[in-house]
Length: 171
Image (cartoon, rainbow, N blue to C red; front, side, top):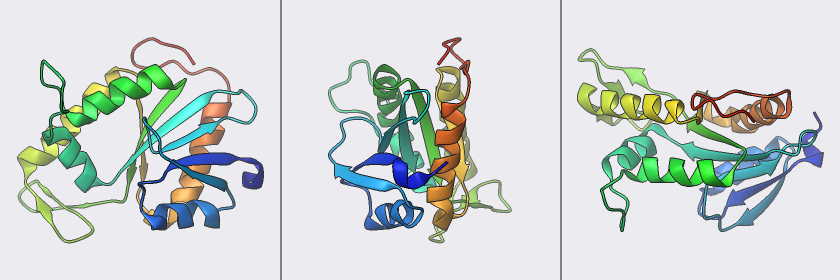
């Protein structure tokens, strides 16, 4: 698939490195304030609206712990984002950008050296299971410099055939 024919709309609050990594892969990138998701694209062949929420592991942990303002009953920021993505897009993807290393005590070490206790890691992992059941695709990009390639693979996957998600919805 020729990336120069694919236009990505990327939230203008994303770090400059995200724009660089996507532009380096050849995508046309438009910076725009997005209400939902971090990367939005219409698939070239099937015309599906694909929304990608990009999170580092640190972002994920913070989103799981933080409550969304104005939501009653309380709901985590992550679950609020997921609910809005499922309303807005034909296919919603949570892309975990960057890896981690396990620690001897069952936790993880983030790329910046911070350690996360096992309990917090499992809380985030349980949240991932929950959103998968709601129909969000979870994808990983372990090599941060390969973000553009990973986004291309996700677009290619979303563009082929029909998909059935955990909530039984087809796209």
